Length: 115
Length: 110
Image (cartoon, each protein chain N blue to C red):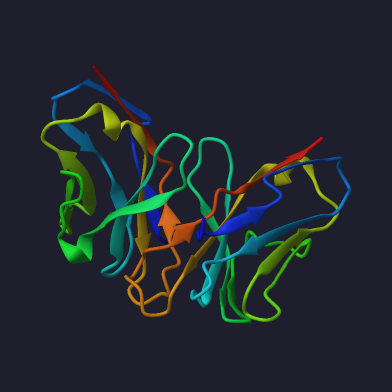
């Protein structure tokens, strides 16, 4: 499968612990996005990378959240001192610079449960 | 602020019936609009874009700027259309940063 890959698929953690999610985009895609989806809601934009540069961050991304894409390939999303409100599906998506506008290729998501 | 509203959570129809999934948006300007679909146990994927005026799997969506709507329609629903559908918008040229609605579940019964 050459699609967007996310790991781990499921993570259960206790409140206060740190968690990290990884996203491997489609290899030729230089744009990478993180979204969060809670129950009954659509995906909400968190942050966006063009190659290794983080170009935009949502106000949803508190200072406990940090995302990196060090070499312009895979990306990590770390949540420090998790809270129960962080429980959600974290979706990664990628797209090429010259692709069809609005066409994001999503991964299967990483589901976080904070106890 | 930009917003996408999908007023219904669930639409259940019989096979062969027409389908209309409603989407209204709020944006000061001319956004780009999309429908995304997620079939059971599959990833979220793009269904169609307003800018292409395309018909995909028999679905079409017309942008009505006066009513700020982008409803998704299909004249004859099929069982395989059963899925979760999300309407989304992006400011023009905004690097595909999408704002999604809450989604609607379409159930097509045999």
